[in-house]
Length: 198
Image (cartoon, rainbow, N blue to C red):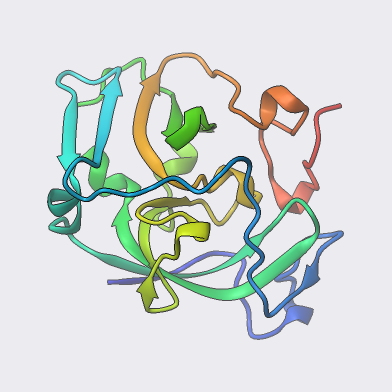
């Protein structure tokens, strides 16, 4: 299945680029810390917190889930936008089908390698174009872009699309992620230029 993300048009003039952004053909690799090593025999993904029964998936089990392809524009807080990026992986919603959410679950803390975290409301992640991706541009993700698994949240600045994902913690209350405690805006809507906290 292919999902075409919202905010897409035929050209830049149709409002595809948020205020303060410039279009690039490149895909800069920005991250904090070193690139983690990947061992497919020990890697796993946990879905836990406010769920009736936590789930842990091996990499093989993750790859066996239904695959979705999305085409989306992405926007970095540093000012660049890249149009029509192509990702494949597992819809966030598909992963939530593996667990029974408790009624009070409203937020997700995405837990990544090296103690990196990103916080996103559950409602945002349940959108039809939010993906846990393992390919980009019809090839496996490169290590610098988040191999083996990266969250893709097209309607938020790219720092919410966390790399090297290892866990999804369902929570009742929001908890600031790595960049948010360092002054980045909690909501991160590029169309509202929510770059930094006031």
